[in-house]
Image 1: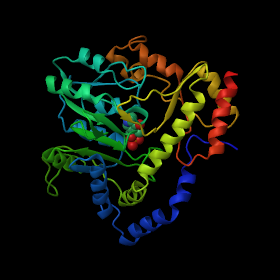
Image 2 (image 1 turned 30 degrees about the vertical axis):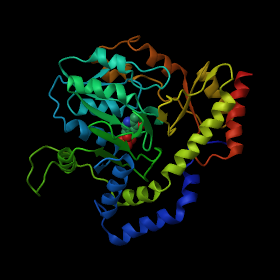
Image 3 (image 1 turned 120 degrees about the vertical axis):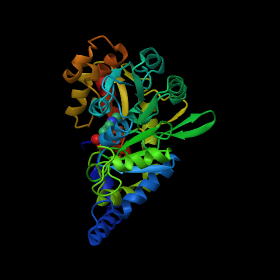
Image 4 (image 1 turned 90 degrees about the horizontal axis):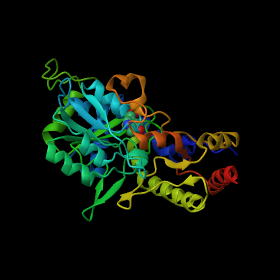
Length: 371
Ligand SMILES: *Cc1c(COP(=O)(O)O)cnc(C)c1O
């Protein structure tokens, strides 16, 4: 039996009735834009993170873009981020008028290396965008004081990490809650996925929350009156209704992902040729992806594809080597840890609905390749 990388149909079968009822209620209301479920979802996500405000928008990309727009970046302003992430992280920086400044990652977690951030700060640096990659948080306790010292904003790219936590000074802190703004994505394949595009910003800053609400609606507080230039980035009521029902299952789904990851760890840790994901002991990982390092990675990938086991390389090409960022002047070899990761990583199926037979197939297929 094939094992897909993600099986949203299997998830749908577990929530068919509640989601269909929620969607029907929206259809009956005929309030498709910014209806009541949008406000409710903003509350639920803010509460989940332990912050004051949630501001919904049309995608995770827009959540980053709006948060960065709120900083009013001037031409030449620099924003430090990681080159080992989905394109949107750096694309949003450029689209908000800033200059992305890439720095290398930690080899274990694949997250931005705070020591490299420190070295990259200049008089033009305005912000840091750490990414909580694959579902575990970056080293925020080192980034926060650094940002404070240099008067920088932190915008967390928490698109892959909704519900993830990090123990800091003895208390749990949620992904998205520590920076000035946290950005989430509800793209269907994310841990909390809509039936289309969607995103959310969270912040504890009352005034900023107000501005983000305006910026997502063309910057106007009153109709036909505009103090700032915003964009059109609303969350559909229908998406909010689906997400509200799914949010009730998020913790249980994350626990399922963690259990599967633990099983893979045990089965693959001793295998020559494979390095299982490193989890920072301070982190509670939500395993958006279960990403190994593999010797002869492309061979393993082909071997899994041949056995109809879903797998994917996130990410095959670092952002500093993308043609659109060539003008920034980072060449091959600029970020060796990142570049090595792009050659070695492979993500395996870890979605909560995986059966034990399917998990066994994944393990057997990986082991089979290295025998
Ligand atoms: C998915 C993702 C985004 C963008 O989210 P969209 O909802 O697809 O626009 C941004 N950053 C990271 C790290 C992501 O994984």
